[in-house]
Length: 167
Image (cartoon, rainbow, N blue to C red; front, side, top):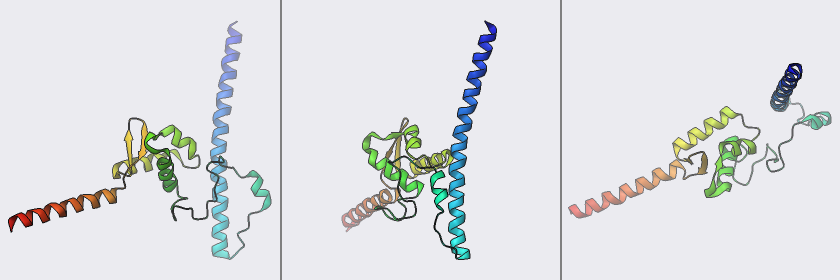
């Protein structure tokens, strides 16, 4: 009986290790694909070689889910930064509306963004006022620049009223 328990634990341990290695393999494979693309792009610029992707590389390329599957090199409808990780994060939060998204939901939708990068963006954007955090939910907020402009407009209005009262 004790032997069965040991074997069951060993099997569970092996399965867990396999799952974590497969997840790591997917991550490393995605990074390798990105590096190959960057290398081809730089070679095209520096050496003048054509940028055509070899057909054999297309079959092994990791594909993002259909909802995120967009060309990465073109400009989207929201401007030049729409394809950047931060731009896609902002668009994702805007689409979520007032309901917002949890960190886990954001990670699931932005599979190509490293966890540390995502954490940094969320923190910086929360501190700048670009997004709001309530509990474990993140929502799109007013950009910090427009909030600062609104404050400046209110200050100018108050200054004018004080000047008029003094006259």
